[in-house]
Image (cartoon, rainbow, N blue to C red):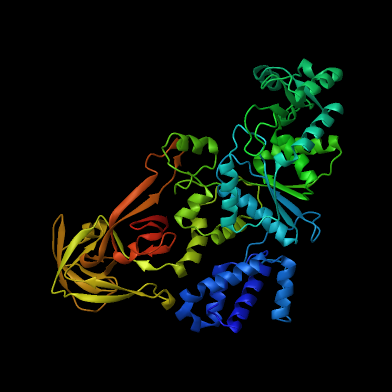
Length: 573
């Protein structure tokens, strides 16, 4: 390592304190901020030592919470480890009947698509509670519908959680327990708590709407005969279904004999064609939660009517009952998380991939330049609420801006460029700061002459006689304007308050550049055909040398993530 032993110790202590205070996960940005605050001498070599610091933080995050506290006590005797988030951090309310070290939560996504911001909210809350109580988080893929699930989506979900920094203690699939689920399904029928229905979907839809039972549920002996056939292959897909024996007149329509098992012909991504009978989420979720030892099951408010069914299935099977915690689903205005609205755009080719910057997927947020720490802070700021409100996207942007602002180089980009020829300007090489306050981000050289380019909007606002400050360069006075070019002269060095300050690029130091600007994907219920704007223009050559994923701020334009040699995506203003 490039950092000496004493510095390694300091980094470990900072990372351990940050980790213990924030649920077992130290945040590299917070660690760097604390480190440079206590060791300003490291600012000059921050780029060189960054890999070492990341390695130390990764090591700390790989330790269990108990191991982190023990190591912190060893390295910094007398340091009090905080069990709750710092006062400045949003805190989740305590869990009912939670026992320290015994809490088990679960995140059960179906692998039928890419994870989105709604998934992020759910899994972050699940993990935060598990860490708050020194418990465990289970990632359980709810893979009981082979018609919709693919291996690609298992991997995408795992990749999304890795990016968020979520580390499940146990990873499993609902399909791992298919034999147990079959057994409990048969047991429920035997206990007269369910039956095999051979009515058509249309007939059952009509009966459920009217609150009337079908004849299939009347005779238990018939149900016992049918259950054997249901599992031995005598029935084909759509010929029979196992239904919960509820109350067809119940005001809660979820209790009107919902489907618990169905026959699905097709190849499962994990089990191939070994299984034909698959449980619905209504049956698998409560049984799996109980068998997995989940103490606190969390899910979004959209399942509110199904909670009665969840607990009644456990009651009839004599299985342990977890606590249920509900919260509102997270989505933003104009950016729906519903696959019903997103998948057709993918399938039709209207949107090319799941990382399109207009989408609410985690791949999209990553590609746009959002950082996981901002998403976590944002989610925790919302707390646990049932209110069906859509938070403003600007709230998430504010958390992200606070994190990336100190680490984003300031560069120049001009959209729809217009030339300015400056009479009297000489060839020169300017040294510009990459950041106004952090010298650790270095400098860059820009070759200038008597011709520069400014943004078209700025050019349109200029009039003869205007004095303008070219940021970090010089003052000019406009002496002539026309549609395609502007002429100016040097105008001294005094920076006046009244001057317009504009960004620019020198003709001697430019590259053609493109920035994608994502807008609202939907307006109401309609796809927004203008949801992706493209800004074409010139950037300084330094921008083209930055690696993809680098965060930059194009002055007076916005924060962007470098997406390629001559392209970027706007993150936000």
